Length: 241
Picture (cartoon, rainbow, N blue to C red):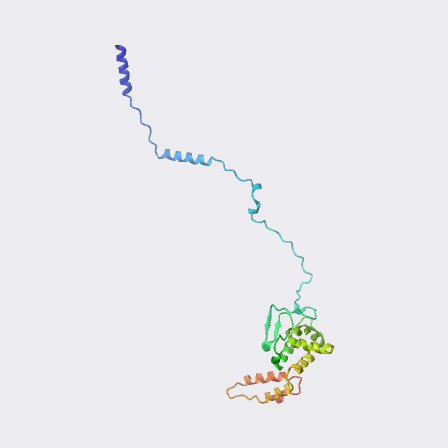
């Protein structure tokens, strides 16, 4: 009886015990859990690729040092127009078109391009002669005389079929001519007969208009008279005005 009473008292005593509540997680415990997760994530080792195994084709090309070029012994560049060649190279990449149809290549003698013979005029031949002589005078090594000048420009005659055929018809007789003499031969061949006399008559008929300025009238007169140089029809200064 006593034993049963003690067991019952023990059960009542055990039943009266209430389990203590677990502590509530506060902000500090949440931060500790987050730090733990980050630490675990960072703890994983990341294997770096061996530099030797990297595909070198994906790398940028290394800088290449170019070999130094030897310095030229001639410190002053030589252009085509200043060379000692008797036949300057015709540079057609940079040309200048002049009045009356002439073409002036860079670094070469001016020439008469392909055109109809009807466009051959006294002024064309005058301008051609003047510009060729000016070009030759400006060269570092100009032709020594008129014969050398004719030899220097002979290659440019192929730019015009009529002139090229005329040169071929002259044959060896051209070898003893000067450049000025050759231009006179072209005037005789391509210009109408008595062209100088007709040009002189044309000049005499030029009258200045009342509304025209003196210099505007005089300039064409002087140009025409320059075309008559070397002919019997040329006006001297006293007879021109």
